[in-house]
Amino acid sequence: MENLQLKDKNVLITGADSGIGKAIALLFSKEGANIAFVHYHDKDDAEKTKNEIAALGRKTLSFDGDINDAEFCKNTVEKTVSELGGIDILINNAGTQFPSESILDLEEENIRKTFNSNIIGMILLTKAAFPYLKKGSSIINTTSAVAYLGHEELLDYSATKGAIVSFTRSLALQSKPKGIRINAVAPGSVATPLTEKTFGEEEEDPNKPPLKRNASTDEIATSFLFLATEASAQITGQVLHPNGGLIVNG
Image (cartoon, one colour):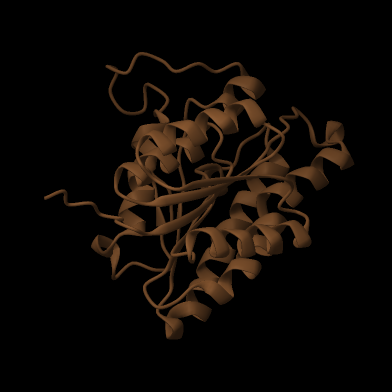
């Protein structure tokens, strides 16, 4: 008999048309979960992800829109609950970044886009989903090693990732009486379409030891799976650090 870790669980994920989010969606599907996911105008990638999830025999829904829109968040949550029967796990993974060598070159429009996508949208979607979560439910947020180490070209992005850590810790305190666990994952360098687009990074030789290569998205997804299962029943308000050996505080 198949021993699936997430059998019949319903999961809502943001930014799952590619990168880390897609790796999470496929891994969770393989473990028995139904997947609803949000993407932002990436219809071709979203369709591919939907087909791959469906091929695993799971229910899947996709939503094209902006999580900075509270009404979109509300409608997404309500349709997910209606179509899948509930939400057991919320993965807040959507994010964007605009590298800049100097604070003097930061564009206000890009600063606001970064905060809207990375933290404000996260809070809005979590607020919409929270009434449907119950004892045993889990929320997992994607932060980053740059929240702890900083990044000279990602001032505003790093600030949002620090905010995600604080949001995670604070919501975990609020959620303890409800039996809902809130955690985060802080990857180091990962080979994703976003990093390749913004920095021109490509995945390096996978045989190199830690600290010498970017992680694959599959290597990061396993941290999310651990936090979504009963294996992490005593973990809340915490951050996992799959970063290849970087030493960070917190």
